[in-house]
Length: 202
Image (cartoon, rainbow, N blue to C red; front, side, top):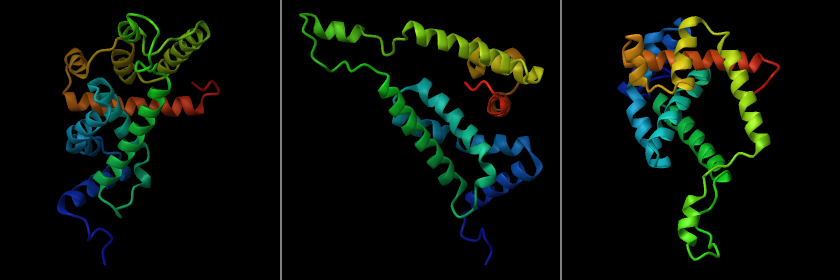
């Protein structure tokens, strides 16, 4: 019995794309996998986080993690099942960490304007030591980015330092939106590899 005989037509299409991505390093295969699931993944994460910016970043992270582990994927399940599992686990971790650093605004505050005061409390406050660590991380991140190829360096700088949206990057570099997203995943992967091999861990 063929390994993939239990897969649906759609799952078989994805499996072939995965094979092309792994065996040939086919950039189009990566882009097609993203195109197939980007929207549905985003809406699932939006439902979980109720925050469009978080959902967008978590969508990128989910694809980044999945592509990094692509060689571990087996056709026991559809690629979509595997991808959505990675995405939901990553999102649960993210929500857990976020809650840890968020002040509760539901606690009673002994103040006649308690509610108003509570709502003014920032979600996250960095003390001087944390601020210094954050600055050091940004400095290290910039040094790591310098090691990337010029094209990937530009993408990372526009997205994470200048905080351009994907649409703005596509316009700035005159590239299709799908290409920008695919190449940003690759750039993040290179960054990850450099950081992993760096003695100065972020």
